[in-house]
Image 1: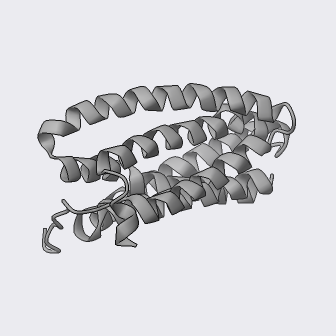
Image 2 (image 1 turned 90 degrees about the vertical axis):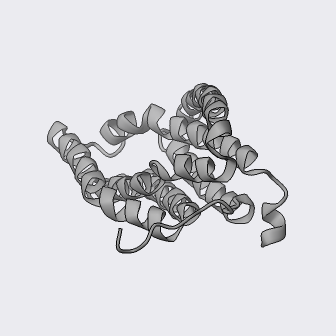
Image 3 (image 1 turned 180 degrees about the horizontal axis):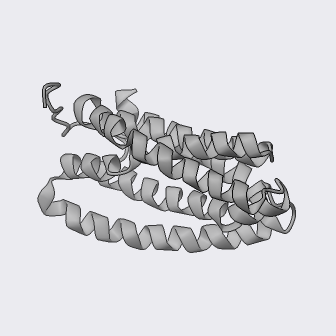
Length: 196
């Protein structure tokens, strides 16, 4: 497993992650609300409840997921979060019902809090503070490009069927998690003490 992680530098893995996750997320969210209204037939109240549930999950999970990233492994937090996000969107796109969409958005909230901040802290630990600024700038550029490409693909795929971009985006996000397992190094991580 370690021999795979030497094939790409940490900065290359971070740029791939940034571009791919932006592309897959745009693929999903470009049509997600339309899917919830047109295919799942959610009412305005149900849409509000889905959004409220997502925000509640994010609020509740922020501290425990941050502890996981700071005490155990930022790499692990990013990988688990990526898998959870992908799984949530595959479920949402496959089962157009209110209950499964609430579940899927809850999974997205857990995954998002796992990755939020962990990926930036991971790359800062791997390359150092003097190099991380230029990498953040480059990843923003790649992420914007990925988002534009993802939105364009989403519109094309949605013209076939509205759930296709969501399922494909979720499955591709799971594939990104597999890529991270094999290629994401973690050499600069200094765990915080459990007392902290």
